[in-house]
Image: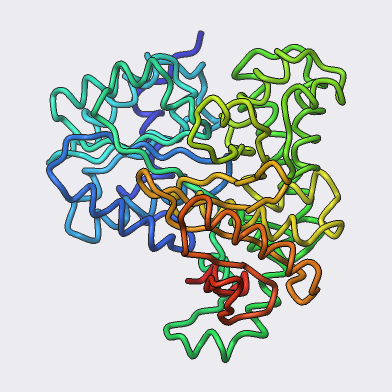
Length: 439
């Protein structure tokens, strides 16, 4: 087995690090950056864990954090970035390689202060938790670990690093970040109005191709689709099939494609099992794997009964709408579902505790936002609010949920309509999707 020498390790690492040059750090993810730098500036001895969908920008973001630390006065030599998906490592990724990387850094680069160590895609390293815990217990470094899977927060990790981590869930670009990538900036409310036409044009692109940074910066639509399909294949093959040693690849692909073709729909594992002719247990396990990979997520029905929540159908959403469109080819079939999926992702990105509501008469509200032990807001996504029958149906459901859940903070997300309305004694606010995303 080949064992890399320390000089070769440092030579390879120098291409990603700030020791002799400034690597390209991409377009700034300002909101996340401010939060992360604020955390690293405290005395808290915790590991910053950044999880998120593959290729959503975590690697560039850690470079931005490192650059920010250096701009505040840190010596570049007091930073170390290691990407464990680097194809040019000449040996198998292992805990032994990680230890030699650290030894080479200490011996050759010679940090002067307490270093910032970034371990990117750390899930590729077996037993990495032991290395991180050792450094943390010695208070030897500030540590950031990233990974494409929430497996980073597995039971084993939770046991080894209980109370020692702060997790940030990273997503593809939100709409504000997407506009920034496209060169559309706004400082005041008036800018939104002045640039509304351009913003609406960008929203159509965002609804079609999603928010992956590389996809957003590509001009050719065929290339965008090719990139998205490659991302999808990598998520399935690397974050699901390889990680969980799945032998029947066709089954997991069929299930993933089914979910991405039915976003914003209610599903039960039992119905999926019968429709796809897959064993129920397989559907349950594979669904968990797909959610763990961050490809998609499920939203439960709101109920004060935990048992009822668990036994009710779930709604499924794609973490990036571009992946859904590239794989399922159903973008134009239902714009309302696309709007709802985008709203679900944004609520998750904002850290909201979300559910849907449905009663025995099949009246439904898209999102129930739980705040503590109470319901803080009810949101209905209604693409065709100008249709009187649609409006009546959606508002009746909203009012019924409002009374049952004792919540008067009612919002309808629309395509264009904005304003306030009184309906059956309740005040309802209407906001276009583009404006809500930028609020």
